[in-house]
Each structure stands twice: as structure tokens, then as C-alpha cells.
Length: 314
Image (tube, rainbow, N blue to C red; front, side):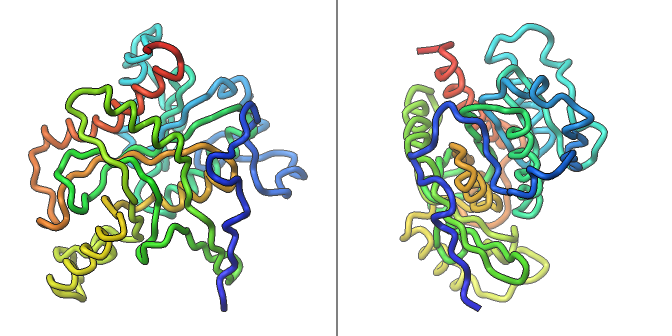
């Protein structure tokens, strides 16, 4: 069966509507008396979502719950907000799926690993922003990745999120049919991030395509998993092809993140740091202290943009 192309189902990149509330693309929600955001332990009847979240302007998502808590504490200090950053509470503490922290106009949420986990989170996040009547929200995915021809510690701002065939699309099976959605990201936002990176010392940053896979091991051409069906030569040939078409890093969430944000008209960007150069190996052997500093780099870059947007720095 031929895939159903929905590449035009959303807003074209760089044509996002300003001063508009967040819109969902599901007419069935209009007839529901209550919408339970199950994995967040929130609901439209049990919580006053506009009061709790109506002032959100920036949403930062990342895989690790601990990392997103650290980011919440970091952005609290960067924005010089009152109170103790250590007292920030996890809004989703009564669940065991995701963690969520609100810091002024910034929401910090973990999404777990891989497309299925972040997809579930994004459905409920976008509905949350819609029910809260948020306006002009920008979403960032900040995380780690494997570099393709880049030194460890390099920050990659995604130009296009591509699949394992190097296509800028996300395929979703819906009722036995393959739905294909575009993964175009907002180019102006990516350029703004690149400009911000030039203002921060010791922050090596590039733009490039990000390849999203459904697996950490075989799907990314690793030779060190429990299974391996290819040779070293085949791995390097594949990585070289990826590099030739502009892929500069590999992770496991960018395509669905880009596709869902685009369909709902949300400005979004993906910013990931590389932990290793995949041409040189598969295992991450960098000392923990160095990895910790690397993981801060996307946070520093996004924080800088947020502060500029809020007029806190020039």
C-alpha cells in the first residue's frame, strides 16, 4: 500500500502565525467533556490549566528526567527568578513516566528515549498548551547525540530532521496505513540559535541534518550491540553516505518532534551535543565529568536565546 502523504497538512516553515493560541489538529477533542492528560496526571476538570500554564512561552524537552530537573534549576538562576531553585517541584511527581518543571515562562519536561516515548509526551504537551490557551510558544529539544564527522562536544542545531533513508519525513502507521509527515523545522529560529552561539565563548556549534533512528545499536550502525548483522566496512560506508547528504549527528527523537510541531504550527528547534565521532568508534569512553560539561552546552545556548527574547540581555 502506498503511503499517504501529509506533508502539506501543517503550516509551512517560516509561516507560523504570531499571537495565536496553540491549536490541536483533532476535531474529536471539541466534543469531549473532559480531557485527561493521563501520563502527566493532569486534566481539564481537575486542574485550572490556564492559571497553571497560561504564561508559558518556551518549552524545553529532553530525554533524562534528572537532566531536565537540572535545566529547570539552571534556567531559574539564569532568569534571576525569586525563590530557591532547589525548591522547584515536579508537577508530574505522582506519575512514573515523565517529569515536568515550570520556571516562570519556561516549561522543562523529560520525554524518555525514542520516538514512541516522546510521541506520547508531545500529544499530551500540545494538548496541555492548547487547553492552557498559551500563545506564541517555542519548543526546543535539547539532548545528546552521536556525531558524524564532528568532534565530541560539538553542538548541532538541526537544519533538517531525516529518517534512516536520509529523507526529511516521519512515517506513522495509522489504522494500517502509512502516514508520511514533513519534518521541516523553522529556519529563522535555527539561524537565531546559530547567531546566539557566536556570542558564547567555547561553544563549538554547527548546523546540519540530524538523522533519527528507531534504535541505539543496529539502527545507528553500531558494532557493539547484542546483535549485529553487518561488517565494519558496511557501517563506515553507511556513515559516509549520511555525511555526504549533510547528516552531522544521530539521535532517536527528532523526526516525530519536528513533524508534530510542524503540523500544529509550533516553532521548534532541535539542539543536541555530540558525545563521540561515530567514524572513530561506537562506545562512549569520555570521562563523566567531561560528558557533564558537554551536556550543559545545549542548555547554555537555549538559555541565551530565551534571555535575549525576554530582553534580559542585548
